[in-house]
Image (cartoon, rainbow, N blue to C red; front, side, top):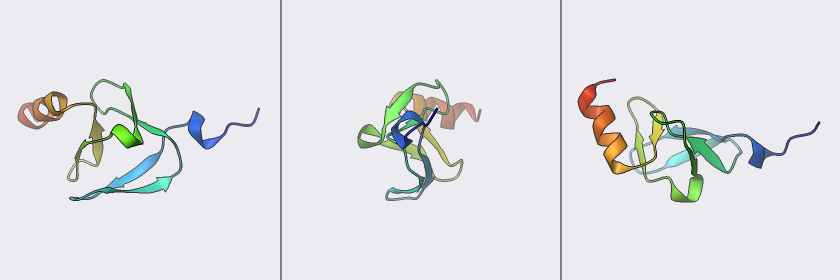
Amino acid sequence: MLMNSSDQPARLHYGPNGFRVLRAGRFVNCAVTGEPIALEDLRYWSVERQEPYASCEIATRRMTEGG
């Protein structure tokens, strides 16, 4: 069965002002909740940890808990 790139999560490199697509896809999964985040909706990530977050609250919790 052939899968197109929209069926799989993208792989990104997170920078301080944006991200670079390393593998095509239409979404990434939140590093904390696992929920899919459409690339056009992705606003929160950690450059240091190289992981995306679904919301500001989730990103803040991840950073303050050190998890």
